[in-house]
Image (cartoon, rainbow, N blue to C red; front, side, top):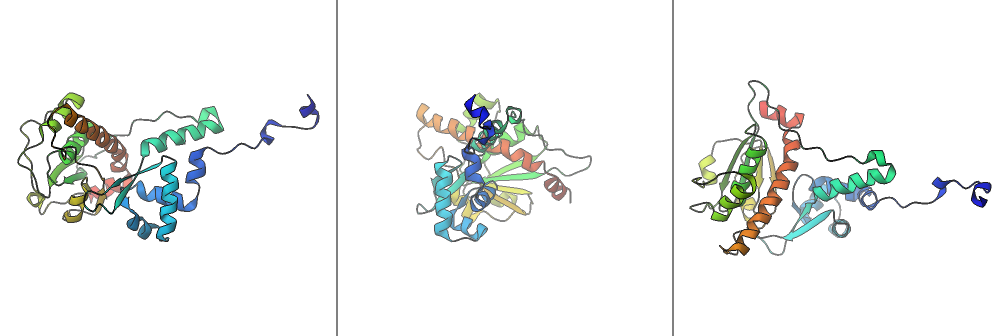
Length: 270
């Protein structure tokens, strides 16, 4: 009653903005988030993209990591480098929570990503996944993209130094977790695709990124550890493939809206 007589109003209370808003509102951090939304990058590459000093970029990357929006993993090609990755799932959750903090009506459930649309007579968008051995990461990505788009996207995969066969754990995890049968599928070398053009080329291996030929106008890198690197054929080794397949599946789901943008469709039809 006293506060009301003194003219107190509830909105006069200072309320700190949600952590996501505080982190992303900084102009440089927003530019870093926007760059990482396109793919995984090393610090020096981010420095080139945002055109800011390396010490400043590293400082803000550390803040984004501390806030859980960005993660980093050591490069398998050069152990002195690290690749930074935007956690899109975490960003989506934080963005929804930020809206709800302002008003309950602004909390929106995440909608499933739209399937790419192919017009009559149009060439389907073509996506190539590349890793070193073409025995685990890239064929898993190829299979999941084809699975989630019901064949509306032309998906392919290859290796810069392919192994003779798919890893048995890759075949197993796709069958058990997604109902996809890759038994009998053969690996292939990137040289086997010479002359073909792809709208999107996605490397999933740090080593393959360094030597992958040019296949098209848009190239993206997903820095992912090789689940078969430990060479464990038991259940512990299989768990690494389960984790990798789940991670790739998340990446694929976030890729699908990108493939459905008018710019991408227009480019694929030209």
